[in-house]
Length: 550
Image (cartoon, rainbow, N blue to C red; front, side, top):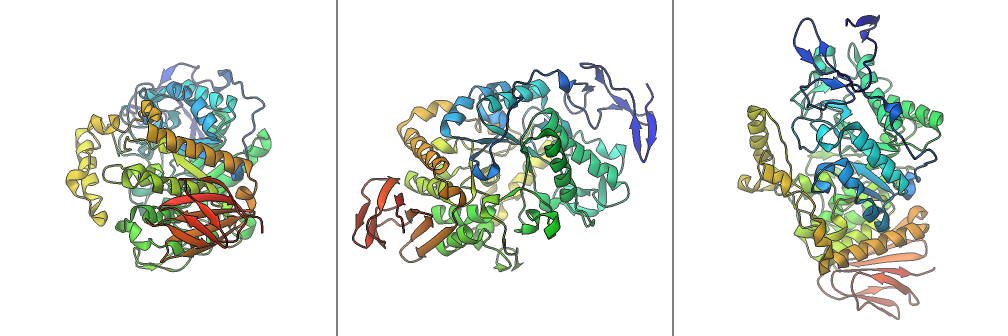
């Protein structure tokens, strides 16, 4: 069947019937998948399969996602979340997430990528849920089950590049430009000749996930790598299109950016000169907290390490808001200004901050249980949207390492060698870097759910449950500004949120902290806290939550 030109670079043909396999022939060459393929059951090089999205029996007709400002987000990777690594298997653990108090689950990318396992950022068929995870219906069943348990679903999407294997997109038009470059090669063409159709390709993809798969929001990977000097930035166009879909459906939808620019224009409205996104990951808060807990100071952590910086992150949102960054060798960022801190996500761990370590160590591998509890307390009481990474809540002992399953041996070898070169800034020996192509790297990254029953794991899980319940039941933690005092030499910090104070002792010694008498201790990470006259006595490496009306 011949496709017919429709003008402006578009070609059309009658849609194949649902379940039919098909492929495209370009200029007499070999068959290739449809760039908008809804399903690739045979992988990135195989034929596409037509899907009737209207045929799925959704049960979430009256579903409405909770406001993002009140969210507790849980990031997970489908392939390592369960032993089976499928959408269907993830459904079985939804009761755990519901009981934990999670309101939003964020899936790492699921678009079709080469091989059977991958982080998902090498996707090439971005309209097609990965075949090894369970395909389109498996993903829909997971989202439907999340909604049935009162949990919203967010999907991580990658619009700044495509993977190198099975990427046929450039054969269909000027999807990439050599004028701009990214860490992954030529940039996506967002502003050169033919860019209107390219931008539509990615906007339509976002709308498909929100409309046909009922996702409640999207996390946009590394938007700083989207090079777009257009008068209307691609992100603004995307936000406008999602807002239109929101009006049409009556559902709350959100866009969350990952960016290392510390630029509040991402979050400001178009009327205020911004792009109109809803929220952004906050690496400054993570880095400040991580360095205090672990003592690490290599790589980009060289810019962090003081309690004063953590205090600035809590009160200002960004630490680097135009001030000099030693790691970058230049000033970085600009002030957050009037943008609410509740539009930043704060976290102790994420897939990046765990998986982009040489050995994929979690925070629980790097510091004591007492310090992990401090980190959890600050994440759950700070004025940001808290986010957990899978297994964090019980101190999972399994690492989360970088893994790939590229069928092409030359590409696999290049990825393995490149991974070893990547960590020179951190001083991690190349011999300590697991081979991404080794299946064991993937298998050892799978969560071990049986270990939850261990005493230390149960203790940490109970702490997380208590913190999450306290946050969800305490309006001040979602709305009141944060006031912070600290003592760098004494290694303690006090954060007030309305009538509540979070007191933290980072040191290995008891600390007497000046404090008004009459405060009531609501919860603590360890016993022994005393409220004396004008002083609060904190055990070593501890955190406490107190009711202390002014």
